[in-house]
Structures are given as C-alpha cells and as structure tokens.
Amino acid sequence: MNMETRKTHAHPVLIIGAGRGGSALLEMFLDDDLVEVIAIADLNPDAPGIKLAKQHGVPAYADAGEALRACKDFPDCIVYNLTHDDAVAGEVSKVFGKKNAISGLEAKLIWQMITNLKRVKGDLEKSQGQLLAIIHHVMDGIIMINGTGEILGFNPAAEKIFGHLQQDVLGKNVNMLMPEPFKSEHDSYIRRYIRTGDTGEKRILGVPGREVTGIRKNGRQFPMELSVSEMLLREERYFVGVFRDITERKLAEQKIEHLAHHDYLTGLPNRALFMDRLEQSLSLAKRGNHKTALLFLDLDSFKCINDTLGHQTGDLLLQEVAARLKKVVRDSDTVARAGGDEFILVLNDVGSHENASLAAKNVIAALSEPFALAGQSCHTGGSIGISLFPDDARDSTTLLIQADEAMYAAKRNGKNTYRFFRDAGSKSA
Image 1 (cartoon, rainbow, N blue to C red):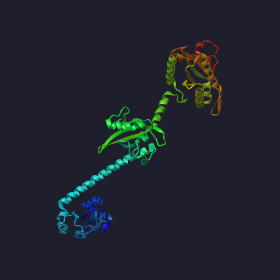
Image 2: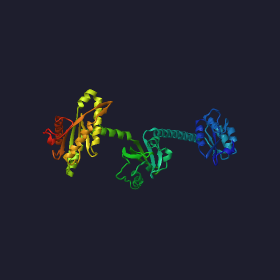
Image 3: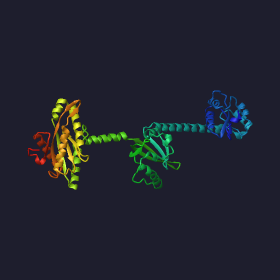
C-alpha cells in the first residue's frame, strides 16, 4: 500500500471476509474520512468485496494470514472478522491482540446494522429521487422561501412561467416576482406573520387557489393561482408556494362573460346588456335632471340584400352598420343590436329634441354611403324612431315601446328617415 495515498488522520481497518457483509462494510468505510480500509481478504476471488476493493485500489488478499502480516505495521489497526473460521480469529489475536479484533456475534451484529442502514439509505434515496422527479416534472410552479423571503427552491415550471432561470433567482427575495404594491408590502407581511401569527386582511397562507398577480422577467404582469404552505424544519421556518399561470383561463372567462352580454356577430351589447345600460342612463338623468334620447333603428331593404346576396353578405352588412354607428355616437352613448336588423341607441344628456334630431340625421347620413361587401356594392338605409326621457316616459320599458312605434311611423313615412314618438301620428318628419 502506498502510504502517500492514505486518508489523513484515518483509522486503519482490515476486513476479513468479503461476502455481502464485508462488501457492505467496505462500501460504508469508503465514504468515511475517519476510517480507511488498508486491506481486505477472502478465499473467493470473485467475492463482491474483493471486486469492490479492486475498483477502489484497496489491497485484496486470498489468504487471511497474508493480509494480517501485510498490516502488522499498523498496531492500531482494527480487524473485522466476518468469517466463521475460529482459526482466523486466533491469527488475529496473535498479530494484533484480542482488543483489536471484532468477530463472532459482534461482527454479525455490525453486519446486520450496516445492511439495515444500507437498505434505509436506499429507500431514502429512492424516495428523494421520486420527490425530485415529481418536483422537476410537475406542471405547476413550486417556489420555496425561508422566513426572510429568500428563494431557496425554484422548479423548472417556475422558470417557464416567470422567465427566470433558477440560478438567477436563488438567494434573492421572492418579492422580485411581484408587481407593486404587493412587492413593497411582502416583507412586512412575512415579518408580521412570523412575529404575531397574524396574516392580516390579505390572507394567503392556508387559502387554496388564491388569485394573485405575478410579474414575468420581461415586466409583463399575469394572473396566477397560488397556494402557500408553512413548514418547520429544525426549528427553521419555510414557506412553499405552489402556483399556476391562469392567463388562458381568465381569457376564456372574459370571453364567456363577453358573449353572455354582447352580440356574437357585431360585438355590440346585446338586448340584456342594453337594458342594463338604459336603466343606468335613466338613473343618471334623474339625478342630473337632464334628457336621455332612445333611438330605435331598423335597416331598410335588408331582407332584399340578405335574400339576393346571401346570409354571409347580410352578416357582413350588419357588421359594417355596427362599425358606422359606433363612429357617429359619443363614447358615453350606447349602441346595441336588438336582434335581426334592428339596433338601439341611447344618447345620454342629449339636451334637446334638436340634438336628438341631429344625431338621427348623422346616423341616416352614415348609412347612406354605399357598403363594399365581398366585392359587391350595396345600399341600405334606416328608419329611426325616437323617444325622450322624461318628456315621453319615465321608465325604460315604455320608452322602448314608444321608440319602436315611432320607428314604424318612420317606415310608413317613406323610410330612410326618423320620427319622434310625440309626432308619430303626423305625416311630416
């Protein structure tokens, strides 16, 4: 044995018997800086301990006596006799004395302990490997922080969601992943909780699937669902956050919400949303003591265009009409599709009949320009009925009925014109 390769301050050990017990003992001592196996012996050259010894440069012998003589210069050497040969035990005593030999039941007990420790170690390594595999491959992001907010763990899913690499965030404060004002509030939130156990109004701990906002590396904010758990390890406090990006889900929810209150074809408010808007407008008009105008529009010649050029062209016409109507009203006004080729407009704080009349003329003028639809030029117009709050009625249902009646009066009066409900019985516009 080359003494220069020996471990510093390591206690010398000789193993006699290189079967399962001797191999397990050698494997354990190879990882121990305080112990060095200076030799191993076994009659079987194919014993597992002999093979392992050769792999790691440990001297191996086929004869126990030869191994003992090779180690006699190490008087403090401890001999582990894992054989059942009493003669070997006697030779050990002659060279090193009984106090340096571990054999018989004592050696068997040590072997059993080592075997059990090896099994437990294997089970722990397997469990740890499974846990790491789950953490590595799970689609949810996982972040672990300590009691000061320092990031200690950041799995691949978290890297993908936030755009940060693990090595770029470890050791940094987790508030780097939060937009204001949460970023500035986070440290005090943790300190207060650790000091008092109080989570305050913005409770996150123990709340499954709380919706919060994160911020990506590129500065873009996004919604995420977060669950935070607390752990105590060796009297140290840690927090584990499991989260997922719910951007797609929120967009889907917004789309469903939009479709529930808007016309699928034109994107305008549908009749339900329109009635809600109308009620709000009337409430504001009552408080502000001003007038609100309701315009009911029915397209002229739409059925002819739809039947002649097809429903697809008719749909394009409705979309173009909606676009033009939105351009001729104020942002504070509402344009909705009532159904078919009917549209409704609410003009807030219209001021006077004259202003309502001017708005109707602007609508008719906008519709008088030809429509270019799928390579074809089409013309249409519109008949408009107008009712006013509070002049004609003081509730939404009556105003809508009155505007509808006035629209039919405009139709009877030659189309492409408008009529007020108060003038619906006369023949002049």
